[in-house]
Image 1 (spheres, rainbow, N blue to C red):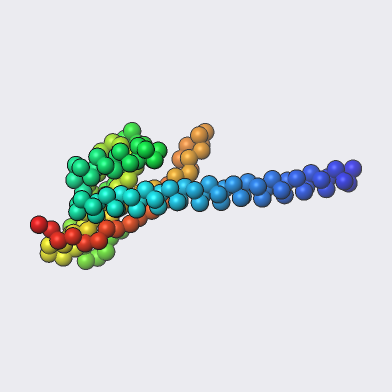
Image 2: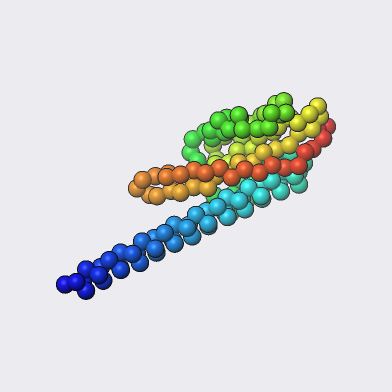
Length: 147
């Protein structure tokens, strides 16, 4: 009987390590996907030297191909406003429409310079429990001279 109890304990320990390893692997994959999406959005904004309809279309096309998270409600990008540098004189949320869950902010830095801050999210979504965690991944473009 003692061998049966010992064998069950070892199986439980092995299962625990397997579950922890899979959780770590899932976290790594989700973070790399969110970081990759963030960098691609930043590259598209820098290529067009700003966020406009053409950029938004290219971003939406890219996110559709990647399989990024879609929202059916309006984005809640306004809550991120307080997380900018103190020298930013004006922060504008550019995408609040229904679509993909990412946020683009235009930050006025100085008199005629602007830069864009992009926030994408790393999600842990379990089907029965729903959204477990939503961790932001942020990035910024270089500054542009406003024409």
